[in-house]
Amino acid sequence: MKGILFVMSGPSGTGKGTVCSRLLEREKLNLSVSATTRDMREGEVDGVTYHYVTRDKFESMIARGDMLEYADYNGCYYGTPKKSVTTLLEDGKDVLLEIEPQGALQVKKLFPEAVLIFLVPPSMAELKQRLLLRGRESEEEISRRIDASQWELRQAEKYNKIIVNNDLDACVDETIAYIAGVRKERKLIEQLMNEEI
Ligand code: 5GP
Image 1 (cartoon, helix red, strand yellow):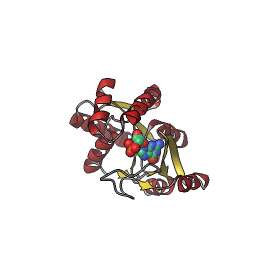
Image 2 (cartoon, protein in one colour; image 1 turned 45 degrees about the vertical axis):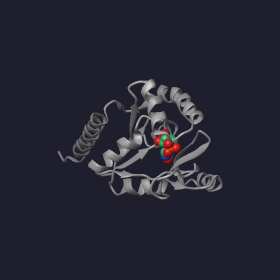
Image 3 (cartoon, helix red, strand yellow; image 1 turned 90 degrees about the vertical axis):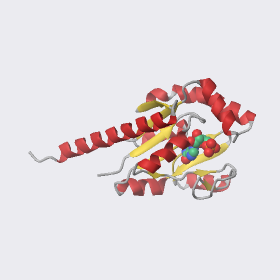
Image 4 (cartoon, protein in one colour; image 1 turned 120 degrees about the vertical axis):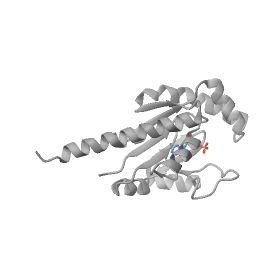
């Protein structure tokens, strides 16, 4: 059986990164390491948090067809290298992508069988508060991310599942239960298709 491609997406500040790290502690999932042209922040590790590359390098990866999806988000490129993801899926391993919505929708076009999860904040006021509290971005950058969230929220209906990240533990539990349900359904369909009658 081929692996399942899970995509965790949603506006910046909804807690995608935190939810994904919790998922990796509890579930057998392989997180794809993205490439980006943005500057490395304190505490980040090249090859672990992201593969940090120049714009030239990123554009040559696009030209060579090495990207499964990519987006220009707030003036920086972010993208998923294709090879590692397809190899894992072919090996029957489930893969998790943590990406913004432009990229998530590209994945859905390429892999209609991918499972897209859209994480939303309990309110926009809370989203802004979280972005301010984590203190990673300038106020200007935060405004741009909040502006971008309007378009992103309009894409929510294209997703397989919407999950509210109000209480982190509850959100992680709900996501795990959803993933377990998808795995069970996919297994059942596979069994039915292979059943000899
Ligand atoms: P940050 O700069 O906060 O690390 O990431 C900015 C946004 O880019 C986040 O919403 C993050 O999920 C998204 N992102 C990270 N990697 C990728 C990727 O490979 N592709 C796309 N499309 N978005 C990504």
